[in-house]
Image 1 (cartoon, rainbow, N blue to C red):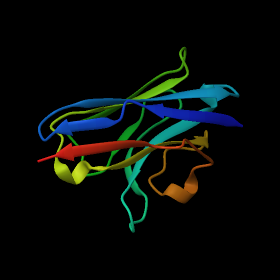
Image 2 (image 1 turned 135 degrees about the vertical axis):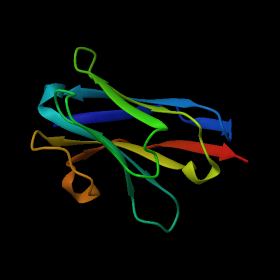
Image 3 (image 1 turned 180 degrees about the vertical axis):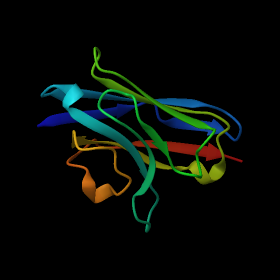
Image 4 (image 1 turned 90 degrees about the vertical axis):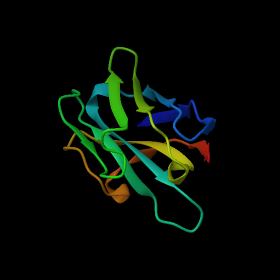
Length: 124
C-alpha cells in the first residue's frame, strides 16, 4: 500500500495563492493515479483535480478550472496542487488520494488510499 502526507495548507486572503504538496511512501508511486479532494463540515468530499500515473492526463472540477494546477514528480514521489486566485468558497480540508493505475476518477469512493488532510482557509 501507499502512505500519503499532505502539507502546504494555511490561511490566505482572497486572490492569493497556495501550493499543496502530497508526499507518498510505500510501494512504487508511479503505480497510482492521484487525486485531490476537499471537504467542508457536513458536506460530501468534493473532487478537485486528478492526474494519471504518468502525468499525461489531467482533469479538474469546473469550480477550479483555470485557477488550480495539478502536477506530479514520480522521481520524488510527490503530487502538487497549485492554487491561484483563491476564493473564500475554496475554504476546506484538502485531501490527497491514490488509486491503483486504472484511469483517473472523480468519485471519492474510487480511491484506495488517503492522506490525513490539510486545512485551507481563505479570508474575504
